[in-house]
Amino acid sequence: MNEFVNSVELGSRGQKTLPAKYYLSAEILARELNQVFGQQWLCVGRAEDFQASGSYRLRAIGDESLILVRDQGDVIRAHFNVCRHRGTRLCSTPAGSFSRTIQCPYHAWTYGLDGKLVGVPDEQQLDGFCRADHGLHQAAVQVWEGLVWVHLAPQPEPFATRFAPLMDKFAAWQLPQLVRLGRREYDVAANWKLIVQNYSECYHCAVIHPALTRLSPPTSGGNDLIEGPFLGGFMEVTAAGGSMTCSGRSCGAAVGELSPADQQRVYYYVLFPNLLLSLHHDYVMVHTLWPLAPGRTRIECDWLFHPESRDATRWNPEDGVSFWDQTNREDWQVSELTQLGVASSRYQPGPYSNREAMSAAFDREYLREMNSQP
Image (tube, rainbow, N blue to C red; front, side):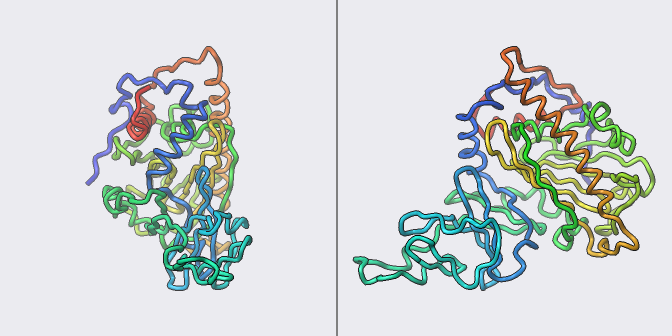
């Protein structure tokens, strides 16, 4: 059984917030995209987004563009969006469906959904040419808990090795069987790390989130993942059978057969670097973060429910979606204010409260991955 420790007991180890350059520097963002986002497993979406052969979505990661597509063998693949002829970007429409092939718009080199080169105009004019040597470059792909993950590096750490501490941790919530019944996309004028740091603590909740505080005591709960790339734990829901909704009541069918304790908890986990996972008894909320600039982050947020929650005569998923949409916007606003503040010549790193232990732990992991010290 996991041991949970309250943030105050864990403490912040006397840490201070990061220096301003970590939120403002284009050079540091370039390093992050290379050393962090380019060297880690990233959550890029849900398997339900690729239900039929040929269905695809584009995913931008820094300067890279991936074509995520389900091929005719029912395998989800991640092709680098780069023609093997002249480097032309193959596809620019964000999502859609290919018939059987992907064709370059420049010279009509044509690839199968599996990435193999299957057609080249005037192929006989290419000296010593072999199609097998010119398939699309691919990123590694893993489907886990209904989520699609990619790794950009040529020789990635095995997914099972990296995620060993989590492999069965969320099984009770039955994520692969859940369906998306809510989605919001946000363009936030703040550094991606400020957003993770904010998510990782509730020191701010009484001031920023009065609705949340009424439903869940901001000093409640504890953390069971306290160091490394996976961080977080739970907070309690005050009302018996209640949930994090505008009404305070459950808004969907139970996602799985949860223990009585888990039915009165919300779990909040950071899966480094870009996934924020919030597990309620009646829905699961998933944030993915995508840095666009030192002071700008794109956030995609999905609300996942048991299929029975589609029954409008019994359930109201929007009750949960609206609650967190408002809470999210409160967080984004204060993150944007922090971004403005750290740009001041008078900003100096300030001390973390012991209630911000998980934010301090995130900073430690971030600096480890960047091989640097503040």
